[in-house]
Image 1 (tube, each protein chain N blue to C red):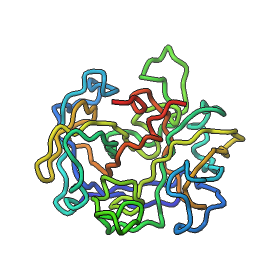
Image 2 (image 1 turned 30 degrees about the vertical axis):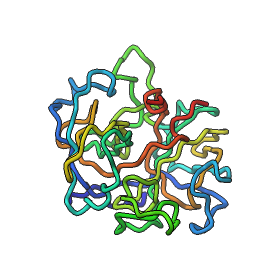
Image 3 (image 1 turned 90 degrees about the vertical axis):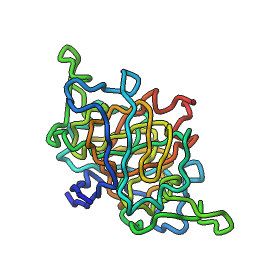
Image 4 (image 1 turned 180 degrees about the vertical axis):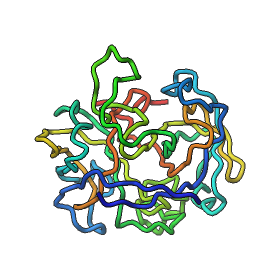
Length: 137
Length: 137
C-alpha cells in the first residue's frame, strides 16, 4: 500500500486522558475542549467564527491500526462488524471525525463544545459542515 | 509539526480525470464511481451493504499543501477565506470527505453514486453516517 505523510496542524487540550473511560460519542457527556493550532496555519483559520459548526478531523494516535473487525461499542454480546461499518478508533488509518461547535476563538486557540477526543490528540484538518452532509435520505 | 503515515487502503476508479473540469460537489453532476480496495482490508468491509450511506475519506493527492486561503470556488470576485472555512482540496493535509451511497458490492469493489473524486484518488477510510452528523442545529 502506498503511503503519505499527514502532519499534525494542532492538538486537542481536554480533561479527557483515559481512552477506556472517555465518552464514545459527543452526546454521551463529552466536555468542552480547546483546539490549539500551530501558528504556521493561523491564516487558514481566519474566517472561522464563534457559533460555526465544523467537522474536526483528528489522528487518533492511541488507536490500534491492525484491527479490521470489532464488537460494536466493545459489547461482546453483539456480533463483530467490519471496522468500516463502525466509528471505532481502531482501523487501518485512525482518523477521527467530530462535528463540533466553536464557542470562542482567540488567535490559534478555538474553544469547542462536546468533544470526545483525548487530551493531546493531533488535529489534521477542519472543514465546514455542508448541507449535503446533513440532509436526511 | 509531528507527522504520521497514512496508507492508501484502496483507490477510486472514475471517469473523472481532470481536476479543472471535475464537479466541485456531488450534486453538480458527479458520476458513479467504483471504490477498489486492497484485499488486505476486505474483512473491514464485510458488514457494509448496498443502500448504505457512508462517509468516504480520501487523500486528494493532486492538491497543493502550501495553500492557507482561497477564493471560494475559485471565484476571484469573492474575498479570500481561510481554507478551514472551505472545502477546497488545497490545504495542509489534503483530506477529502465524501458522503456517498453504495449501489452495489462485489468483494473489494464498491460501486457508489455521485462521487466528485478524480480517477486514482487514494482511499484512506470509510465511516458510517451517524445521526449526530446529520442533525440540523
